[in-house]
Length: 149
Image 1: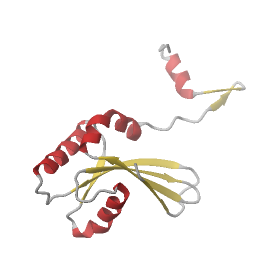
Image 2: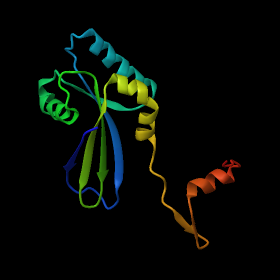
Image 3: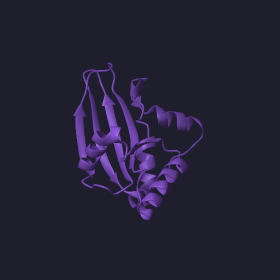
Image 4: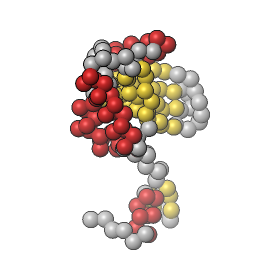
């Protein structure tokens, strides 16, 4: 995978992480296999309840974004291309990393991993109670009668 890091401006006093799937497609694609793979990729993301945005490589207004994604993936004119954009907003600046994931075949073989990448929330911070630190998630689960094994 290829990563690109961009710096931005400050937003808040705490760090906020956000992940977004971006799918590079082409509405003017006449390659039937690529067109089918685009449709299948978008349907699979929908079926997995994964939010995504599309960038149409044929849209002249989005040419700069398309070219930037081509540069990150190292692949031109092959659709769809899937990217994960992870941004961290902190007290002093915003950093975004764009990672090329792959094509439709990658999505088919890695859909479960992608769900984990996008939907997994960061764990809550450890809290102090009675002088001992503990993970609030484990406390909540064990109080509901679940066991770990």
